[in-house]
Image (cartoon, helix red, strand yellow):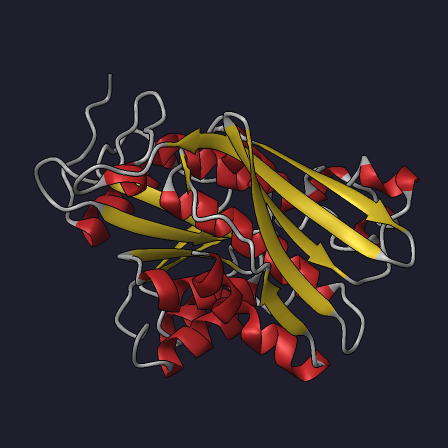
Length: 297
Ligand code: MN
C-alpha cells in the first residue's frame, strides 16, 4: 500500500526533483483499519510531504511494530514547523484565521486524516525540527496476518457501518471538499447506507488522483478548493477516459442560475446548493447509486 500511495504522489514530486523512498526495513505488517481510510490518510501525509519540501529533497516512508501497535512514519526534508504552529496543524481549515491559513499545509487534509484515523482506533501526530523537516506518524492497532480471504482489508467496521461484503455490491462515493463540517454532515447522512463507502479528498488534484485510483460510483464535488477550482476538477474528470463516465454532483453554496447552467453544460449531472437539503441529497444519491434507500430509523 505504501508503494501504491507513493506512485500517486509522483506527479507532485517530479517537478521538484524529490526522492521518494520506502525504508528498506519497512515491516510487512498488517494494521487493523479500513483500507480506504488508511490509504486516504497516508496519501494526505505524502502529498503534504511532497508539497512542503525543498527542491531536490526527499520523502521517506518507514514503519515499525511497537507492541500492540504499528507506527507508519512519513518524513520530509522541508522547512519544518515551529512549535507554536504545531498545535494548529490538525485544526480544521475553517477554524483558522486568514494569517494562520498560510502555515505549512495547515488543516489541509490533516484534520480529516486525524478524524479518519481516530475512528479506526488510531492516532496521528508530528515531530518537527525547524530547518530539517517534519515526520508525521500514524499509529494503528497491529493485526495478525489475515487468514483466508478478506482478512485485513475487510477491517473493522465502525459502529452502525459495514465494510464491503454481504449481499449486493458496495458502492464508493468520493467527496472532494475542503470544509470539514460539510464533510462531516455528508458522512453522517451516508452512514445510513450499509453498502456505501465514503472516501474524501480535501484538494482538487488529490481528488482527481483518488478518482483514477478508486473509480468511485459517484463523485460529490465542491467548487471552492484550496488548489484548483471545482470546475477545473470537473473538466479534467471529463477529459480522462477512465473517469469520464463517473457521475459528478456539484455541492456548492453558489446558487446563481448562470453558474448552475455552466456546470451542467460542463458535464455535472446534478447541482445541489448548500446548506444541503437532506431529502434532495438522499434522492440524488439513490438515483446515481441505484441503491436501496436507507431505513429512516
Ligand atoms: Mn470549499
